[in-house]
Length: 222
Image 1 (cartoon, rainbow, N blue to C red):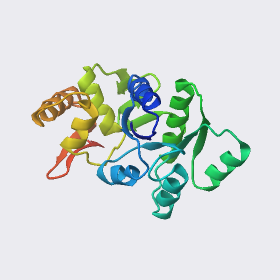
Image 2: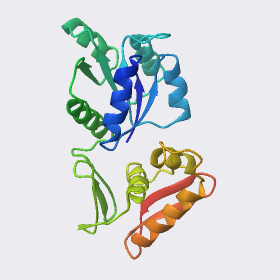
Image 3: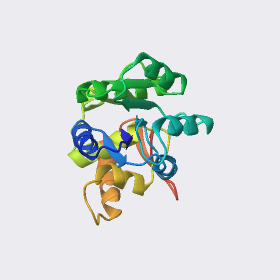
């Protein structure tokens, strides 16, 4: 799952990027409220973690801007101002959840997963496409109810695809999700991983389809 973090405290942001990354989230960080909408236009995110005390454009204005534009991305607000009035103001302003600093990263992860799950109309943190399923809590794929063995990079690509079944993801989006910490990775690396995933899904009623000019899409089929 790809998250946008809008936070101006560098130490906190660095810690969150690392901690969430270790648990399957890919986090992009901006430290100015004016950069939020620009980032959302450039990249598809599953949720926004929004600090209220941002420079440039504060969190309340960022939230108002997003909701006025009918941007329905789940938003979890972080703030040091833990008061009833603050919580009520954020929720009325369009926030989906609220977490006061300091907080435990495990609670943040649980709240993020719940927000994304609710946004997708799911009752549990599982994703599926035909006979293929992914349990985000166990970080386990199953094909026809049997565990599916994948390399870490294959796992990352297939996880990105199953989180958006029926929607194409471009090579660039997949590169950003799989090789976010590496530079100078060729798009051909994604082609190799897609080829390997297709081999692993052979003879199953689920496939990775190539959509010319758009990218790759996971879909159920005969």
